[in-house]
Length: 214
Image (cartoon, rainbow, N blue to C red; front, side):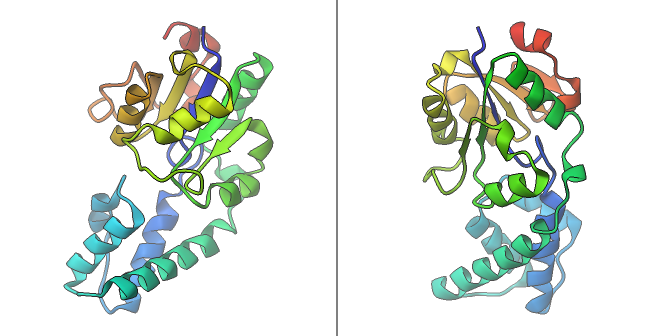
């Protein structure tokens, strides 16, 4: 019996990857070198500070810990500038509809994201009210594949992990869901998300029947 659905944000509800890329590219340009889309592939699923280390490696630049912290703040400021201009039509296909389907069926919903900007994004997309609880980077200390974010989401919903389904687009997120003892629906490539119980192209392909058959 599925009692709760927990959703990652980036790549599941909305695609903010382009804004992260533009923000990193702007930071690189500020330091006098270029940052390409191919370079950006190395940053997927990587924390902000680890991403900065990769960026500096690409530019052949060494920075102190204090300087790195300032650069990370600058990158985040660039990113926040972009996401505060987002519009509701940037929601990925089927996301709003499936969230509403869950609500109508009495299935609890939670956001489980490492992003510290999750509330800003949800408010811009006008989706905040469709989540019963929101666990973001301001509530967690351990990154995926650690299951902390999903376990906290289940706890907030008073749901047993075995009665929860996680929707994830990243390998680390799938591993976190499984480590939490939850069902997992992977959104994206079967080659990358092969440990998920079900793999779909997006929430527009998800139905209550598929949920019940997990």
